Image (tube, rainbow, N blue to C red; front, side):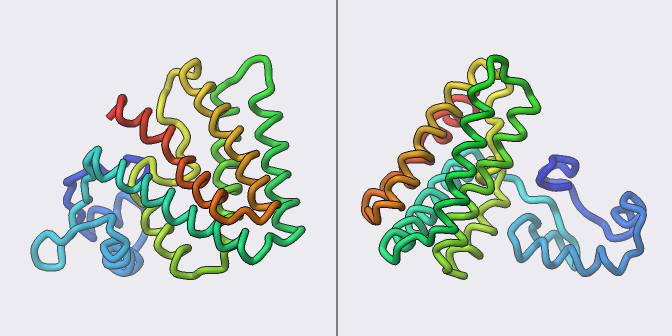
Length: 207
């Protein structure tokens, strides 16, 4: 609900009201609120109270840059160790899916969602392939910041603006896979870091 914007930044959360709103008992709510606070989505508000955290434009940009740094580290580790054939095959399946989505004559809102899901899988494959619990856990928390997740591709609601950005990002996907396949560790890391730049540039204009 928080990430979907159903709870407004600064909104105070009460167990009883939230339980009624969701149609559940107070017990799961009582367990969930401290967990969400630990994840950084909620802040303390008095005795046993919580408030929905707000995120500034700079928070969003910092989170996107953090994702680039951590995914760059993941890509470097994969390239140094050597990507498994299974990983390369799965990444190339994402490339083919992205090519098909972006190769359509008419790009629609449903395609935006499909691309976001593919993009999320592509990035998750690289993070999982690094086999680093610290990197994975840190990225999971970082993804709670709006627009920071690899699935969050809808920075512009104007599809005419979005398509060129996605085309550029997907061309980067192809080069990243090539670097991993060739075990070019430094190049793979640099490409993953650079991969966050188009998102930051667009958000600088929109936020």
